[in-house]
Length: 239
Image 1 (cartoon, rainbow, N blue to C red):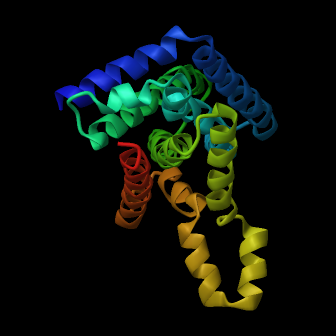
Image 2 (image 1 turned 180 degrees about the horizontal axis):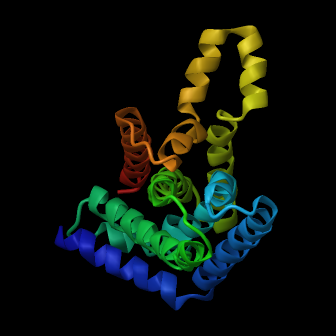
């Protein structure tokens, strides 16, 4: 695990030592908080349901912005070959970069904790769904990030990596959209059910209500593991 920790520290430091890291973090906080504040005053209820309902959409754009440089920059600068000659396994490098990105994203959510603190003084919120919402947000970020890491490993251009990552994330996001599911249901109810269960919103909605289902955990682990495995395969081809 020493090699993984070394990669983790290196990549996490890079997030906080480059302007793009702060730009992405600020954009996430500004967009999600502004949207939530607008819905809060409309609903007049001390809850974060509106905040968590918007996260699947915002994260599908913001998370690939975090992952786009993880491998694409290595390829562009020619440091990938140097990295692969180090005494570490490919999966250790992939895992280290993934954990660094996930930790950086977790910092985003830590900076939103003043919201539930404000709600506690504003009213009497139910903290069960709030905790479940944060858990769901991290699970969703984990899936989106693994997809983004895979996209970044495919190219040396960060913008192309961003577009590929957003495209794949959007596909899984749309699988949970009701109009699309209703259209598929007209063709085949069984197919509609299968497509829905592959969509991230189907599982995120369950967790954001404070309900942790074994099927949601299996889905998250499977999806994350699949795209990290694909990430390893792509990097292994360059050895």
